Each structure stands twice: as C-alpha cells, then as structure tokens.
Length: 427
Image (cartoon, rainbow, N blue to C red):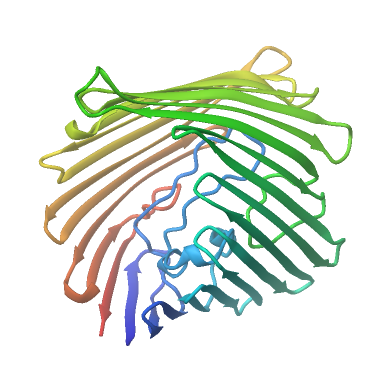
C-alpha cells in the first residue's frame, strides 16, 4: 500500500518562512518498505539538548526527524545528525528472508551536496552475521567514499565480531579502521567482554560517528547481576560492572588509561540507587578526572532525581563539574515536569575561575486524549547569555492528522517573537 502525508508550515515572524512538503511511504512486501521526502519538515517539537560536555569527543544525540528515525536499525552505525538540511531524500529498508538492506540518498540543491549510504547484511543463523557498508558524500571541492564490512558469529554463551573499513578522501589522504570484539558469558549471571580497535589519523567517515581518530584502544570489562523474587528481601536486584581501557595515540607518544566501576541496587518499593566512579589518567597536557553520580527514583510514585559531580585537571587547568535533575508525573500522569541544571568551573593559571551554567525544563500537560500543551524553558550562560521560552499546543486527529500552534522557537537558544502554525493532513 501507499501512504502519503502532505504538510504545511507557516507563521508570523522575521525568521519564519512559509513552505510545504510531502512524505510518502510504500510497502513492497510486508517487511520491505521505501520512503520519499520532499522539503522535509524540521519543526519537530522534541528538543534534544546536549549537556555541558566533559570530554574531547563528539557526543551521540538522538535524531527525532521521522525520515531518519524510521527504520534506523537497518543502517548500522550511520549517524543521521551528520546530515542537516536537504531538499529531498529517498530510502528503502527492510528484510527478505535472511537478508537485511538499508539504502538512503539525500540531496541538497544549493549549495549542492549528495549523501548516500548502503548497508547490507546476511544472517545465516540467529546469532551470525555477514555485512557490508558503502557510503559517500559529494560536494564542491570535497569527496568522501567509504567501504567496509564485518563478520560475526556466536551463541547464547559467547559472541565474536570483526570489522574493517577504509575511507577514500579527495583531496586528502586515505584512512582505515578495524575492530575486534569478544563477549563471553561466565555462568548465568556474569560475563566479560574485550574490544580492540585501531583508527588511523586520516580516517574520516562523513556519515558515521568516530569519537577518536589516530588511536589504538583495548577495552576489557566484567559484569555481574543478581535478581531476587519481588518481596523476598529488602533489595530486589543488584548489578556490578568493572572496566579498563587503554589508548595509545598515533603521534606524540601520548597514552591514556580509563578505568572505573559502577553498581546499582534496586530496593523494595521500586526505589533504585546507582553509584559510579570513573578515573581517567592522561599524559601531561591531557586530563586527570574523577566523577561520581547518584540517582534515585520510584517509578510507581512517578518521580526520579539525581546529581553528579566531578573534578580534575583539563589541559593543566583545574576543572569542576556538577549536574542535577528531577522529574515528576502528576494528575494521573497527565502532567509531566522535568528540570535539569548543570554548572562547570574552569580555573586559570592565575587562580581565577570561570563558570558556565545551563538549565532546561519541560512541562507537558495532556489536556485531553489527543490534545497536549508543551512548555520549554532553556537558559545558558558563559561569556554571553542565552534564554528561551517556547510553547506548543498540539492536537492529534484520526489517521495521523495533526495540528500545531507554536509560540516562539522551542528548539532555539534565544527567545524569538513569532507565532507559527503547522498542519498535517494525510490522505
């Protein structure tokens, strides 16, 4: 069957444009589907806020755009947030017997850019895997083509996986990356894992997330868990994790170690406590950092809260980080309130401290079965300040019909005086 969805977005304000777009989906078989989008809509109400980062590497964030979120499990390690605005896109995904396929192409007309990804896998048995990935990005003055593949096999007691990929960049040097992963169960409740990977300095896949390049890493860990029948003891579940990571960087003789432990315990009455500690040791001009976290919640009573704290040395300067969060559901779960607060302190060689604050809050009220009110408050302050308050009234009708009234810009950093209307009508 063919499903089509036409939408229009318009509003009043200096930065609001009027436009229309189209999404279409077609089922070739019950398990194989293709999708097309023309001028995709980015006025999504779900904001994904990035926390104040305490590492040097890029952080993976969720992508809420429907064109990318649907069928994402068929595209492997593809990181869709690497593709921002584009004019039209086409993708096909699904499975046929023991084969799985994911094909995607996105084109931006001005300035021109084309992104393509093809992911294929064959599963001879339930826990065995043979796969290949091809991806490319082409724009003026830059080409990136990546070719990779992997194989894995295992059972309920162990799993082994090997992956290798090469990137061919113009202009620039080619790069490569490979990884070996092993997981083994020890008894019914415990096990260990081992990972080894090498990524060359010039390996850059435009459409994947690579946290470190020019590094050789080995990672080993142990885990244990125990679960008791409900009501048998004052504690009902327990989990323990120990891990160690060593990295050798490609140049400069730089080495690092990352080790730590984490455990969680679930108490009677649906209250859980989590505690973790991570210690990172770097050579000079890198980091020496320790952080702790504690979280508690009672799902049946619909609340959770927690905090985190860390301190150490970053690039030979003292560094501190603190965060806290709380969430509560009220009025028979029709009202959901959440609050997140973060602060960091960075010292100088003269003894002075500079601070950064970040806060965001969300209030969602279900006024009816198909009617919601969402209020988002966001604030950020370092060298300059940003504040934003945005509100959305959303009504969902039958057959995916939807109506949105947007005040301000809930996804932006600064407050914008505008009123926008979004209407979706499938047929």
